[in-house]
Length: 327
Image (cartoon, rainbow, N blue to C red; front, side, top):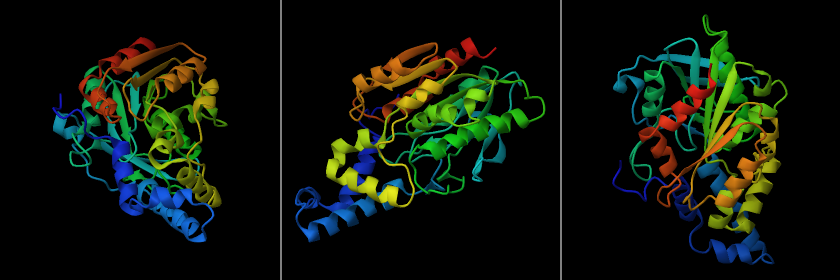
């Protein structure tokens, strides 16, 4: 267990980056809506946030590789329905059950290293837990992250475009010899937790993929929900305006309505003390899921990033959930 509990707060890193761009004058400038100079400054600050925080997070450092944990991984790549090439690791185990895992924002398939706000969040450890339980594991970089390509809209958002990544990952697995009938469990976290329900709502999405037997959603939420308290409504509204101008979904796109399309059992995981989350939102999200479900609260410190470290050190609930449903 890392000793520094108040570390690796992903949203704190984002806020710090934004403050570095805007400076302390941002709040005053944003509040003066009658000033052309203030509006110009607000516009510039919002563009800076998009450029520095939502821009692609490619070729980021890895905390480890599967080989560090005694696993043999094959480099793989596959394409999404909108032509984006995704890259990842395939760690072969049994062909009867497969665990697919992506990652949180600002990271890559193996997690995030120490130095990006705190302690290591090492997703290779979670992969090892699945592999030790007999699973084949696919770890992949989402679009605009790691070694995967940029999407048509090159922002790290967890929107409808990112939902296509999960469909492509499932189709890649079932295209492999011997895996045509594999039972598949999929995990999405952070922005991936927002994209995963959307993968069920897509036309010809995961709701039509009979191999998918269960999913885990870890700390869902919208960028707007997470950042309005940090940046303020005026700034987020301006960011949304600029995103819409280039054809992107905005920061307030909520994945909760997409849960209506989910047709497999769901485990929802949330740090109950997440300072940028809400227990009320989590409960509402859970209530909206129409299938068999369980809500797994993590009693951690007031640090959003803690949940992602927690699942690397305590992956048992993840493995047990898939064991229960992948048959």
